[in-house]
Image (cartoon, rainbow, N blue to C red):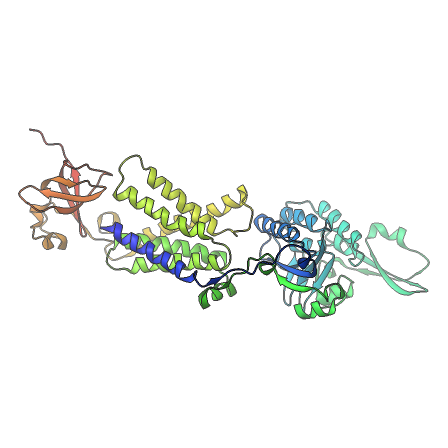
Length: 506
């Protein structure tokens, strides 16, 4: 029977998750209030800028403000993404409800949409070999360049440290910027202006006028950003920034999870490895695909345990990594085995309209979809449909892999349906399968034999064949055959005896 085997696989998968969790120490919650007024909270903004990422960052900001945080540093490392989502988040950051810092660590970047977020902050902090700017104007944009130029100009006007003309020139291809150097009693200063502003800005105190080609300012490295006044100094590390930047010198730096009491300590070395090395999205997609393929292989080749091992390892890694990085909670962990329990009940115990099976599929898709979304991220129709599409694509991909396996295995094309199990029709060709020999039957006698259902076939159950006193395990081709029905052996498929219902006339 396959139901117990499936149950064992699910128990093994769940056990790995449960074993990892008892050693989890309670998170050290920091009480909201004045304590967090003196901390600097770091919020990561890494990878592609997507609507879901921006929603998550906005939720993190709101959670910090609710707990009294007054200083937030955004750790940015991104080459861009969705401009419309970034523009909305940038405007939220630019509202000035807290002291904001954009921190780009060594070898990092804030390009395209990420550059919007960086200059929305009051202070820009660059590490060594960093880049900023670099708007990709060659592809269709969700926000017109004119609107971007206006918004960048507003950020520059609101912050004297940022050269507004250079920010606006980022999204105005081919437009040079002129550097006007003034001399007065207080020394020299430099002002950057666009061509249309130049006539009104020239004056008697201008001692030098230098035109800077657009290609030299479209994307700035750390040294160029320092030269044009976008930053006051380059910080080689986070600790250097904390100790040298006066506004944050007396603040206690905390990661986001620590500040919000979400840091999960303990859990053993396994969970620590997952926290330090979070899986990329493509790997999570691959784990879902491999786990599904493993389950199908195990169901088609019972007794080999290879497919079951793949299923258990793949989904255990998926949920353990998510659990370690606050992507998966107990809701997803409980829903996953419950989904398979309902599906198994539908297949083996409950005849009817398929309510249990449909509910099981719904819970399965829900578990995997939520497992791809951060727990703290607000649910939105866009984010849910995006992750649900990824789950459906992974499961569909597993179907393609299974079909390929069926076709490529030896005998896969020759056998009917290309199944993983050799299917032998006993219709008088003289071949007798091993299952028939094990039961002591001649193949020709087994096919076509009739009997009475002793235990409901759902679709597996027991039948007493005519002339025998002991029931045999069989599988019906229909969804459900009630006790007392008459059946006939249709074929032997691997180690299964497949029967059809018949109606006998007196």
